[in-house]
Length: 167
Image (cartoon, rainbow, N blue to C red; front, side, top):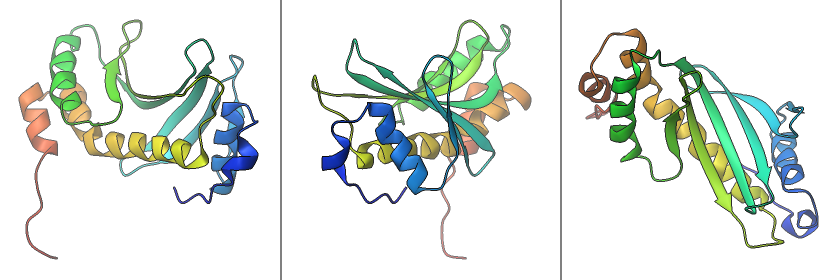
């Protein structure tokens, strides 16, 4: 995201309004959910991802979630948890998790802010970039495990190849 911040003006805004400015600058459509979260979609390398931001005032924390739209059945969860541990070692910002209620695979990232501070547009854009980059990098591993009947090691190996040379 290439957003030109005007952060001085945005400091007084609700943290999710700062995110709205980022999305509007990128001409992305978004909605507020019944819970007050900010939901939108972005096209990644593998699919369209659903993302949502939530402001947690009790922790002064801006949270971003990205759904891979993949679900681990109860029988696949042990393998998914093993794959999660391999993947999360390679993710510097945020983490992947499998939600216990429905097995949904989600990437989560949070930004803790000092009391009374608001995120900058650049920080919000960076959170989005980190989420989509992680999803694009590791989506194939989750897909290979959950739909391709690969083991966690095979799924991880399949998405960690390095390209050598020039095309």
